[in-house]
Image (cartoon, rainbow, N blue to C red; front, side):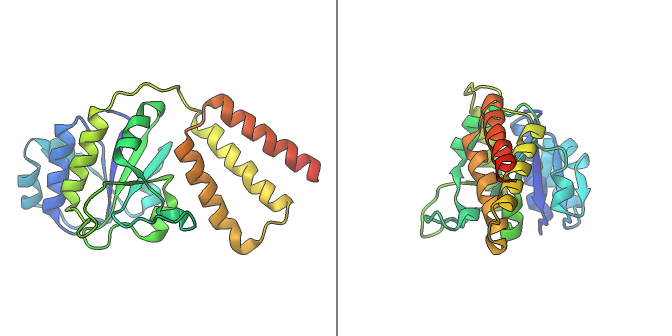
Length: 229
């Protein structure tokens, strides 16, 4: 799975970092990015076992934005979700649903995991295109970080659903840019604009439109902006 990048945001315990490197090796993953991590020493290396090369080659960066550079799609993870559509930042799909769509993305896809204690912050989740969630008992839904990672990697490794090739990243970003232009053209309320843009991005991430579908929607937005002006 050469197109998968695993991103750990501010992990606090080196043992978890090592265990995740081991799980990555188990499931054919080798690209690990660490955002402002704890120091990783002997314990991390011991936990990595045969995933030591993954750990040794991990890229350390300061920000999530740096870790996501070059990725077509990013999927954040959280055990805190919502059943209401209004809190769009925390409307999830399951890991299995995410895995079933993976082959539709030929370019780099990032799986983003958060801190052991607080997970990903609200603004970090908003930066991701999707939110993925591992269903668990409501009484105690929080999994250990390395255990959650292993479940995600297993689902990604085991799924082989064939789907059409989606539009590339430039098509997607052009469409989002025209969507924002359309909001400007209709004088959409400023205080609702950022939230609406994130909601639209999240919706398109779930829908996985084809290149033809992206271009059709892009054409509608372009024509709408021209007519309004």
